[in-house]
Amino acid sequence: MLASDIRALRKARGLTLAEIALKLGRSVGWVSQVERGLSTPSLSDLRAFGELFGVPVSLFFGHDVPVESERGAVVRAGSRRTLGTSESGLMEELLSPDLGGSFEMLRSVFAPGAELKSEPRRPTEEAGYVVSGTFDIEISGTWHRLGEGDSFRFEGKPFRWRNPGMEPAVVIWVVSPPVY
Image 1 (cartoon, rainbow, N blue to C red):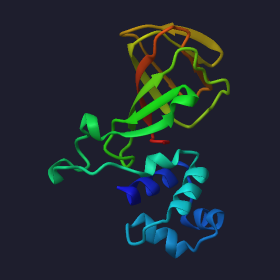
Image 2 (cartoon, helix red, strand yellow):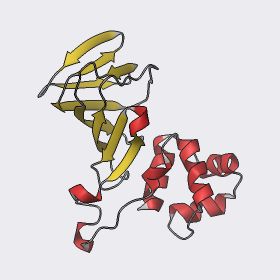
Image 3 (tube, rainbow, N blue to C red):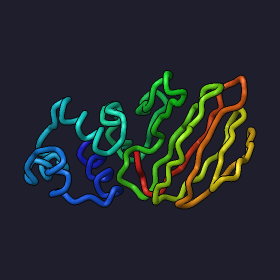
Image 4 (cartoon, rainbow, N blue to C red):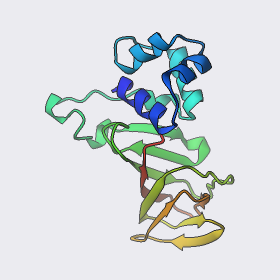
Protein backbone atom coordinates (compact mmCIF):
# COMPACT_ATOMS: atom_id res chain seq x y z
CA MET A 1 0.00 0.00 0.00
CA LEU A 2 2.84 2.41 0.88
CA ALA A 3 4.55 1.88 -2.47
CA SER A 4 1.40 2.51 -4.51
CA ASP A 5 0.54 5.60 -2.44
CA ILE A 6 3.99 7.14 -3.01
CA ARG A 7 3.76 6.41 -6.74
CA ALA A 8 0.23 7.88 -6.91
CA LEU A 9 1.33 11.05 -5.08
CA ARG A 10 4.32 11.49 -7.40
CA LYS A 11 2.19 11.05 -10.52
CA ALA A 12 -0.58 13.34 -9.20
CA ARG A 13 2.03 16.08 -8.86
CA GLY A 14 3.49 15.44 -12.30
CA LEU A 15 6.95 14.61 -10.98
CA THR A 16 9.46 12.16 -12.45
CA LEU A 17 11.50 9.63 -10.50
CA ALA A 18 14.60 11.74 -11.24
CA GLU A 19 12.97 14.90 -9.82
CA ILE A 20 11.94 13.06 -6.64
CA ALA A 21 15.40 11.55 -6.25
CA LEU A 22 17.06 14.95 -6.64
CA LYS A 23 14.75 16.61 -4.11
CA LEU A 24 15.24 13.80 -1.59
CA GLY A 25 18.99 13.47 -2.16
CA ARG A 26 18.54 9.81 -3.09
CA SER A 27 19.19 7.78 -6.21
CA VAL A 28 16.58 7.21 -8.91
CA GLY A 29 17.03 3.48 -8.34
CA TRP A 30 16.17 3.79 -4.65
CA VAL A 31 13.03 5.83 -5.35
CA SER A 32 12.01 3.29 -7.99
CA GLN A 33 12.53 0.44 -5.53
CA VAL A 34 10.40 2.24 -2.92
CA GLU A 35 7.61 2.73 -5.49
CA ARG A 36 7.75 -0.97 -6.39
CA GLY A 37 7.76 -2.09 -2.77
CA LEU A 38 11.31 -3.50 -2.98
CA SER A 39 12.81 -1.03 -0.47
CA THR A 40 11.23 0.25 2.72
CA PRO A 41 11.85 3.92 3.51
CA SER A 42 12.91 4.91 7.02
CA LEU A 43 10.81 7.21 9.18
CA SER A 44 13.04 10.16 8.18
CA ASP A 45 12.54 9.18 4.51
CA LEU A 46 8.76 9.16 5.07
CA ARG A 47 9.00 12.60 6.66
CA ALA A 48 10.92 13.80 3.59
CA PHE A 49 8.29 12.30 1.26
CA GLY A 50 5.57 13.97 3.34
CA GLU A 51 7.27 17.37 3.11
CA LEU A 52 7.88 16.96 -0.61
CA PHE A 53 4.27 16.01 -1.36
CA GLY A 54 2.75 18.35 1.22
CA VAL A 55 0.98 15.56 3.11
CA PRO A 56 1.09 14.50 6.76
CA VAL A 57 3.41 11.60 7.58
CA SER A 58 0.41 9.79 9.09
CA LEU A 59 -0.85 9.18 5.54
CA PHE A 60 1.91 6.63 5.05
CA PHE A 61 0.87 4.55 8.04
CA GLY A 62 -1.98 2.37 6.85
CA HIS A 63 -3.86 -0.11 8.90
CA ASP A 64 -3.68 -3.80 8.19
CA VAL A 65 -6.56 -5.24 6.24
CA PRO A 66 -7.81 -8.23 8.27
CA VAL A 67 -9.31 -10.05 5.28
CA GLU A 68 -7.00 -10.32 2.26
CA SER A 69 -9.94 -10.37 -0.18
CA GLU A 70 -10.84 -6.82 1.03
CA ARG A 71 -7.37 -5.32 0.27
CA GLY A 72 -7.75 -2.47 -2.22
CA ALA A 73 -11.53 -2.78 -2.21
CA VAL A 74 -12.98 -2.29 1.29
CA VAL A 75 -12.13 0.09 4.14
CA ARG A 76 -13.66 -0.83 7.47
CA ALA A 77 -14.70 2.03 9.79
CA GLY A 78 -12.10 1.08 12.39
CA SER A 79 -9.30 0.79 9.83
CA ARG A 80 -9.36 4.21 8.18
CA ARG A 81 -6.15 6.19 7.88
CA THR A 82 -6.47 9.43 9.87
CA LEU A 83 -4.95 12.65 8.56
CA GLY A 84 -4.61 16.03 10.20
CA THR A 85 -4.68 17.07 13.83
CA SER A 86 -7.29 18.48 16.15
CA GLU A 87 -5.05 21.58 16.54
CA SER A 88 -5.50 22.40 12.83
CA GLY A 89 -9.29 22.29 13.17
CA LEU A 90 -9.54 19.65 10.44
CA MET A 91 -9.45 15.90 10.93
CA GLU A 92 -9.75 13.71 7.87
CA GLU A 93 -10.09 10.00 7.30
CA LEU A 94 -9.21 8.39 4.00
CA LEU A 95 -12.31 6.46 2.92
CA SER A 96 -10.64 5.16 -0.25
CA PRO A 97 -8.55 1.99 0.13
CA ASP A 98 -5.49 3.77 -1.32
CA LEU A 99 -4.45 6.67 -3.54
CA GLY A 100 -3.99 4.56 -6.68
CA GLY A 101 -7.37 5.19 -8.32
CA SER A 102 -8.62 8.16 -10.29
CA PHE A 103 -10.09 9.84 -7.17
CA GLU A 104 -9.85 9.85 -3.39
CA MET A 105 -12.71 10.03 -0.93
CA LEU A 106 -12.32 11.61 2.50
CA ARG A 107 -14.45 12.08 5.60
CA SER A 108 -13.58 15.57 6.80
CA VAL A 109 -14.54 16.88 10.24
CA PHE A 110 -14.21 20.67 10.58
CA ALA A 111 -14.08 21.95 14.17
CA PRO A 112 -16.31 24.89 15.14
CA GLY A 113 -14.58 28.11 14.07
CA ALA A 114 -11.98 26.33 11.93
CA GLU A 115 -11.13 27.95 8.62
CA LEU A 116 -8.75 27.74 5.68
CA LYS A 117 -7.43 31.24 5.17
CA SER A 118 -5.25 30.62 2.09
CA GLU A 119 -6.83 29.91 -1.29
CA PRO A 120 -5.35 26.74 -2.69
CA ARG A 121 -5.80 26.21 -6.39
CA ARG A 122 -5.08 22.72 -7.52
CA PRO A 123 -5.55 20.96 -10.83
CA THR A 124 -8.41 18.83 -9.53
CA GLU A 125 -12.13 18.37 -9.69
CA GLU A 126 -13.62 18.31 -6.19
CA ALA A 127 -17.05 17.61 -4.79
CA GLY A 128 -18.48 17.37 -1.33
CA TYR A 129 -21.59 16.39 0.59
CA VAL A 130 -22.39 17.91 3.99
CA VAL A 131 -23.38 15.11 6.35
CA SER A 132 -23.94 17.35 9.38
CA GLY A 133 -23.30 20.83 10.68
CA THR A 134 -22.92 24.15 8.89
CA PHE A 135 -20.17 24.53 6.31
CA ASP A 136 -19.17 27.62 4.34
CA ILE A 137 -17.17 27.25 1.14
CA GLU A 138 -15.83 30.07 -1.00
CA ILE A 139 -15.35 29.12 -4.65
CA SER A 140 -13.74 31.73 -6.91
CA GLY A 141 -14.58 34.57 -4.51
CA THR A 142 -18.21 33.64 -3.82
CA TRP A 143 -19.18 32.28 -0.39
CA HIS A 144 -21.85 29.57 -0.10
CA ARG A 145 -23.41 28.50 3.22
CA LEU A 146 -24.23 24.80 3.20
CA GLY A 147 -26.09 22.64 5.68
CA GLU A 148 -26.92 19.00 6.17
CA GLY A 149 -27.72 17.32 2.84
CA ASP A 150 -26.24 20.11 0.67
CA SER A 151 -23.42 19.43 -1.79
CA PHE A 152 -20.94 21.26 -4.00
CA ARG A 153 -18.53 20.75 -6.92
CA PHE A 154 -15.79 22.80 -8.56
CA GLU A 155 -12.83 22.26 -10.86
CA GLY A 156 -9.46 23.98 -10.77
CA LYS A 157 -10.77 27.04 -8.92
CA PRO A 158 -9.40 28.78 -5.82
CA PHE A 159 -11.37 27.90 -2.70
CA ARG A 160 -11.51 28.44 1.05
CA TRP A 161 -13.70 26.95 3.75
CA ARG A 162 -14.85 27.65 7.29
CA ASN A 163 -17.14 26.22 9.92
CA PRO A 164 -19.21 29.13 11.27
CA GLY A 165 -21.27 26.87 13.51
CA MET A 166 -21.02 25.77 17.12
CA GLU A 167 -20.89 22.07 16.20
CA PRO A 168 -18.39 20.13 14.06
CA ALA A 169 -19.22 20.06 10.35
CA VAL A 170 -18.82 16.66 8.69
CA VAL A 171 -18.26 16.64 4.93
CA ILE A 172 -17.62 13.73 2.58
CA TRP A 173 -15.09 15.14 0.10
CA VAL A 174 -14.09 13.61 -3.26
CA VAL A 175 -10.97 14.77 -5.11
CA SER A 176 -9.85 13.73 -8.59
CA PRO A 177 -7.02 13.00 -9.13
CA PRO A 178 -5.95 12.09 -5.60
CA VAL A 179 -3.75 14.75 -4.01
CA TYR A 180 -3.40 13.54 -0.43
